[in-house]
Image (cartoon, rainbow, N blue to C red; front, side):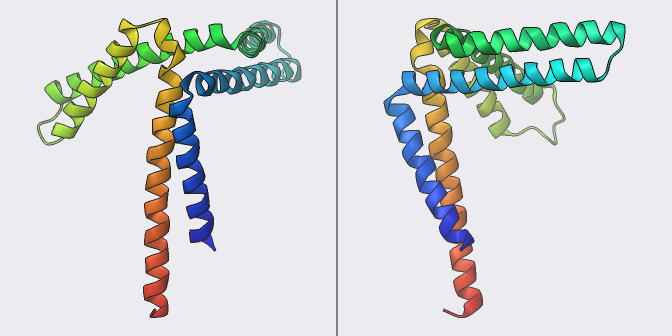
Length: 176
C-alpha cells in the first residue's frame, strides 16, 4: 500500500514538475501567491501572539512585525508579478551567497572534509545565481518556476526509485 501511494505521488510530482518547466511564469506566480499567503498568515499569528502576551515593549514590536508581515503577504497576493520579481532577486542573492560560501568551505575547510562535490556544488550554485542576476528582472518570468519544476522532477524521481526499492524489498521478503 505504501509503495503504491508513493508511486502515485511520485508520478504526480514529476508531472507537476514538467508543467512548471513548461509554464515557468505561471508556476512562479503560483509560488509567489502561496508565499504571500504564508507570510500573511504568519503576520496574523504574530498579531494574535502580541495581544496574548501583553507587555508594553514586546507588544509594540510584535504588533509592528505582525502588521508588516500581514501587509507584505497581502501585497504579494494582490500583486504577484511584483512579488515574483522581488522573490527572484532574493533567490539570486541567496544562490550567489551560498555558492561563494561552498567554494570558501572547500578552500579553507578541513582537508578531511574537502570534496570535489562541495566545490562543484558551489560553482554550479554561484553560476546559477549569476545567470539569474545577469538577466534580472526579466529572469523573474522563468527562474522560480523553472527551479521549482526541476526540484519537483528530481524529488519525484527520487521517490519513485524509493517506491521501487520498497516494492522489491517486499517482494523479496514474501519470496516472490
